[in-house]
Length: 397
Image (cartoon, one colour):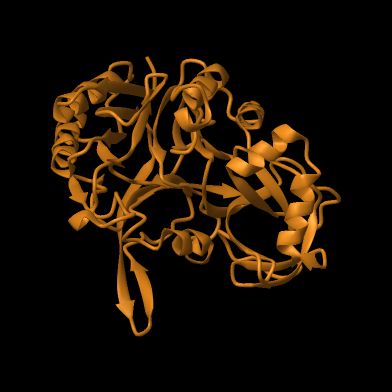
């Protein structure tokens, strides 16, 4: 009998699908589960809430954690943009599970996040699910080491299909995401669980991009706008690099250009996997500046990147080979909604890569609107990544 299980159920009746998915996840377990994660894809927030209630009932006394999503992962498959529920169950003997619900309060001229449990010496990992419209997830995650030193956070940003509240243009998911933990369902903020005690866990983030052109030092910048790279106007430098690429790589750059910020400034060379990857979100031909999806200080090393399905597959497979858990018994997978069928031939790609790497391990998760995971020892919010939390056998078992 196993310590981890997963399940997947499709169909318009999300409550019935939730019950079925949880029952599938529980079926192979050696004992009653301690933690059950459930992810729901659907158009109606009320039906998603009902599915969460049904999942809670099917999970019994286990702690339930989950959210809505544009797609779910379970039973070795990925399903996007149709009614579906995935479930993942874990038996964690002796583990401590501290559920939390995060909210933001306004204090003077700033927002304060409240609700995080106090850190314990035996904390191992935190799973975080957030609504990107109502919770400052980027700022919270980037500063999480100040409040939770050394605690890796893994998870994703929830979403739901359909128009937003009052049909707000350009924000189809606003007000529709649902988060659930400990028997409660929320429409905003963030939820999660800190896992502590005798638990063997490891994390990995596969960024799905590969570098192009040379390393460059940022020589002039302000906030998220880069004005000069290696002493040359940033846009001019970008054009030089792209025009020097082979035709197929120019096409990749045209479909979605990214930039990587080197995580280790002291490395002699920076290669694939050595960067925190961010999007290039705009350019100004008058000033020669480019805007990116993060703040980068003068003096940092950067390198342009492209999204590439082949590189993404190679990177994920190579990272999974280096896991120090033997064997991996279960895993949570948070895959970007820009991966799946948007990057690969089908929605099953990442689930299949994990299946080949981990064998019969129970794997569940969802397609996220942003993924949370540590790179080089610091927690970050990512895009176009696969963020994985894997569990092995504790040493004393």
